[in-house]
Length: 362
Image (cartoon, rainbow, N blue to C red; front, side, top):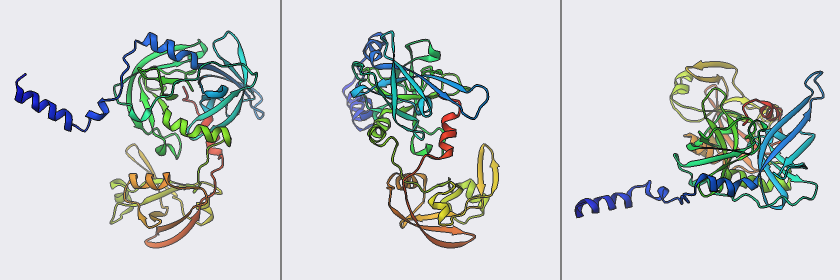
């Protein structure tokens, strides 16, 4: 390579904004070695719940996976164990061990269990960093698909920060998409990088897609673990407002001269938003693949900050705290209203339980 060309390439690498991301460590271990390192910290989860309101199919068994944490604790999916009367863990020692649920969170689909028979579970899983994941990286999923036993599948990271609209709070909890095959029974098991570290917890497979699965970023999961252990649930503020940011389509449908604000589509029963009299939508409209519920209030400002785009709205919501009072400027029928809303702690709602019972988990 000529000196001038070499210099140009060097400058391009130095100034290319993607270059720092490419510096992520790739241990380059063979997948057989990765499996040998990671598998001892992966467990099989067997759970049984009983439906007291059904005359048939009252016994509901579930099979999934989990990873070992410190202190004999196990991280898995909430949809496996949220209502279970019996939980058994297979540590790979040709025996099953009883466990109890310490806490669960239906919004993130995470739960923490604890072994109760005093057995020493072995080495905890090595925890990686999901923030540095790159699309195209090779990963391995380990779990107990269809109850066959510990199984490894491989693929790549297909996307990061993927929003899967399963609940009204999904936009606050983006997932990792992978094409590593995830089947029923992989739920709660790890997605492993080339260094043998857990970078995500498998949670959903798309029944209508081929090798399209989703996993909870491990940084997001580990941030919730202390609350699940100490309090039995995740602590979140509750406002009860669900809606969509005003975009070009909504601006056209509503006949607005501006394109900013949050259109309130639904309000959760008994929520602070209902108590202060905010108005939800009543007129459903479908435009292409998008569904809107029109007729509700439009929140223009929160604590003096204009809701100009999704990023601003997400930043505000993520900064909310239990006990905080919000000052809302709301547009209703062409008139600006001012409302105050104080945030209590969010309880487990009926919709959360329905979410846990929805098919689609890995």
